[in-house]
Image 1 (cartoon, rainbow, N blue to C red):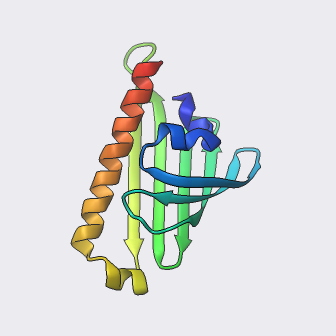
Image 2 (image 1 turned 30 degrees about the horizontal axis):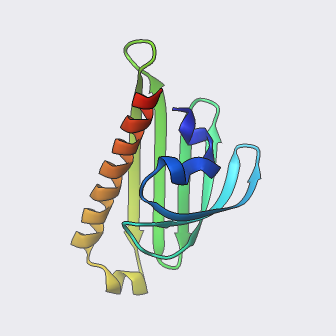
Length: 127
């Protein structure tokens, strides 16, 4: 799952990304701006941390939108396979909470998780 390490290549790998700009990179820590197709929230700043043990943490807390994503790629049951542990926390407060219901937010979250896991599956099949 080397695609996750190439943060600047995420728009080609993760199909829910509408737009993305890399603002800076220092080692395994990236600053990016990102807009998703599902949330349609405009560009928000995000932090990305890559760990040597194949973990990725991705988060923002900005303008009433909180997102935290953790992905952990583990060795699979056989060589050439991987198991992925993926979690996403999504919350809105303030004005964004007035614009989107809790039910709609959870539906969008479920959609984003399903799309991302599908992207991981397609990437694994290419390798």
